[in-house]
Length: 88
Image 1 (cartoon, rainbow, N blue to C red):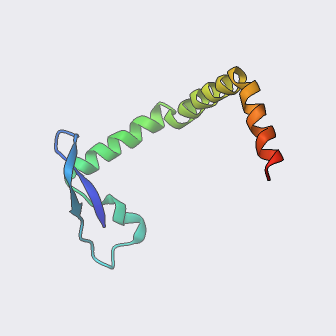
Image 2: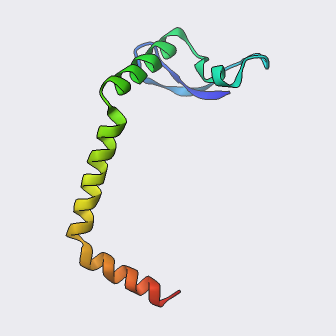
């Protein structure tokens, strides 16, 4: 498996790293390969996202921003849709 290497300080490395795994390694465990620091960072990131409801909050904000954009540009978007419908 090829992946970006993460430095011990958590910054993204500038090289790709090829992780070796035994073919007997179950598919669901292959993504757990990496340095101890990489595994710790990934687990901390996962825990933080779970505890803070990151995905739900992210999606709510994204939907609000997209709705505001559509509301603000409704006329132009309607014109674009009408143009696309006419040229099908």
